[in-house]
Amino acid sequence: MSLRTRTLIFSTFFGSCIAIGLLLGSLTTDNWVRANPKRGNSTNSEGEVHFGLFYGSKVLDSGFGKRITPVEVYTFIQTEPESMNFWLWLFTAIGAGLGLLSCAISAIAAVFKSASSSKGPVNMLVLIASNISSAVTQIVAFICWLVQFIQYLQHNVLAVADHKHHWYSSGLASLGYSFYMVILSTLVVLINISILLYARHCDRRDRQRLEAPSEKKNECAIMLY
Image 1 (cartoon, rainbow, N blue to C red):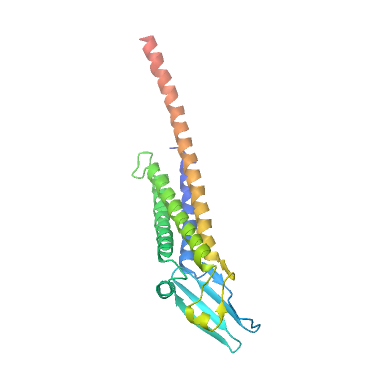
Image 2: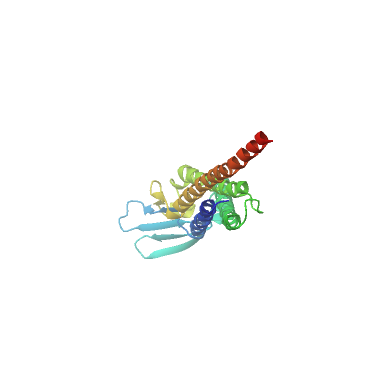
């Protein structure tokens, strides 16, 4: 394996680390969706809701001071089944988690592969497969959350008790930066896959160049014989 090929493979380690950072950021922040609810026709009321995958917060001010309420997303799904779909949420969480695991495997595999010989313990196909697995699971995650947003969250992020006090959030929600971190992470992984495929092509081409002279020598030896 040439130095150029090893360098290309090792460069994917940094891509995997960037993807890991983005996924960790998306999983630990509470900005997968955000909304600014309003209360009836009141001009003094203001609200702000942030949902992460696991936790969030709700701040409602009816003009008498802010009322801050922490939100556990799983509990919210159980108590407000019309506001979020459990399976879409679950597949989003699993997809992001598996994407993070695959990125970690890819990062470790890139180090071992770039440091070992072509017949080392880490095969190029394993390295490519782990990156493809990461990309696929992340795509599943952001598609599921996008469907969740379109079907449910853009229409409502509030509890029934809030509606009784004339709060509404229909048309006032948007996707947050935590969601876009998953998209950026997926793009980084796709770049990694492109680099690995190019590195594999370069490795094959280099092997063919090395094998060609030896084949010609064998032919010449046979002719002389």
